[in-house]
Amino acid sequence: NAGVTQTPKFRILKIGQSMTLQCAQDMNHNYMYWYRQDPGMGLKLIYYSVGAGITDKGEVPNGYNVSRSTTEDFPLRLELAAPSQTSVYFCASNGGTGVYNEQFFGPGTRLTVL
Amino acid sequence: KQEVTQIPAALSVPEGENLVLNCSFTDSAIYNLQWFRQDPGKGLTSLLLIQSSQREQTSGRLNASLDKSSGRSTLYIAASQPGDSATYLCAAYNNNDMRFGAGTRLTVKP
Image 1 (tube, chains in turn green, purple):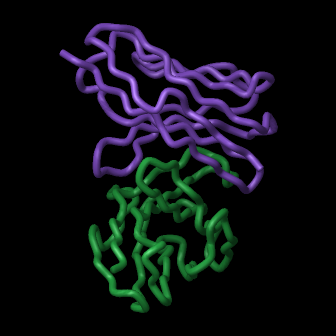
Image 2 (tube, chains in turn cyan, green; image 1 turned 30 degrees about the vertical axis):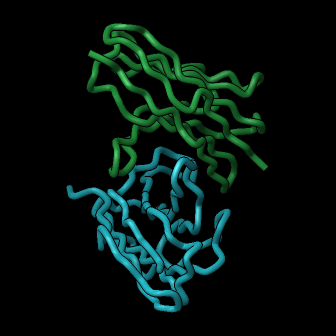
Image 3 (spheres, chains in turn red, purple; image 1 turned 90 degrees about the horizontal axis):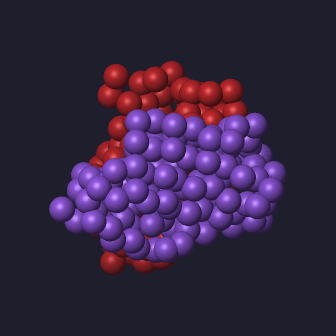
């Protein structure tokens, strides 16, 4: 199993540009998450999904959108990039029966908005 | 709103020492608490998950404990090694809410 994969690894955006961060998992997990991690800070939950077609907001959803059309994929969309969105983005999944079960993380995408 | 705190922010110990990392949380109605390791520039690696009904979990040289009444979890690392150098984060899971601490950066000196 590849586990949780994320692309790209690095990206530089200009203010106002849009992009999609890709996340995929091959473990048939129902639950998937997007987090951001700012320097010296803990992770903050952006959005999560409990299964295909079902998503919900986390602590910091503003400026982001998600979709979950398949069990495997959970892309994160930035529509109008702002410098405040400079961060490292992590995708995670869990194969348990609730959102609070053990999570497994991807390697992250480092995004800079200039 | 759950708040998770990890003190100290950084810790340096000589190789071979036993050490304890701390994680405090404000809302005791947690479902689970998970400990992670993060190496520089990398993602998070799951170490241990303690369910709310459990008091502790062990994996090799690691032992994590949970005391919901005091809002505290500890990660005990026995016989530390230079390869244990990393940032250790804890996460408290309430219903549909997951909150992370900022982590403790551990350095184990040879």
